[in-house]
Image 1: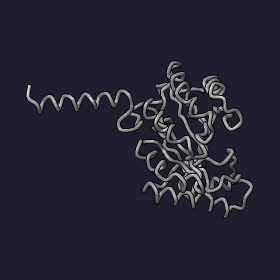
Image 2 (image 1 turned 135 degrees about the horizontal axis):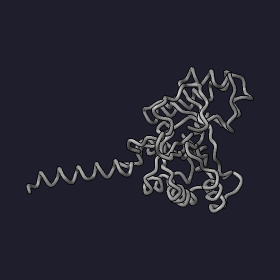
Image 3 (image 1 turned 60 degrees about the horizontal axis):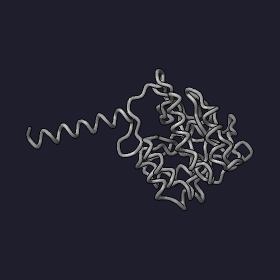
Image 4 (image 1 turned 90 degrees about the vertical axis):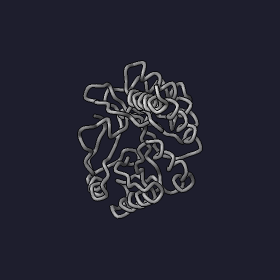
Length: 235
């Protein structure tokens, strides 16, 4: 067998492995059909923060894609390299406003500024304008929906959460998620609290043991396209 042929066979094997595991230079999921597979998606709010780099290492090691809903003022400007790494690793980056106000309790023009400013900051850092957002505390209404539609943002809520902002015990966080996770579910976590990242390996392993496939938000809903302004809680 020639050296060139051996190289081609090795390359083909690596590609096949990437497709089977859903991982190739970062957690890029291959052609998973969530109409058939038992899919869930991990989402993280409020970062980047001091624990986000460790989380990205865990996700890379576990071959898991995630979606990060980022706050513009402070977190994004303090950790620009982590934002770039999220995109380079194949994760989705979404908009979580500029300073995390309840968008339903500020004037529409301020709500628009909160989202538009974060859109611009993330586009400058990554070269991509987000298509997903999460309203702070899940608070949304017709005015927020109209602004999101204008900015090309689908609203992603959740149906499983760990309350990790309140309880920082990794075991408690793990147990809450494994108990509440459902097929087609969107899991809400925060990468800014000390107990969350240590819980992620056990959450991933536990979900997989229960037959779940971890995918991105967009893969969860495919082949349906997420409409700007629309509100999505589960597939």
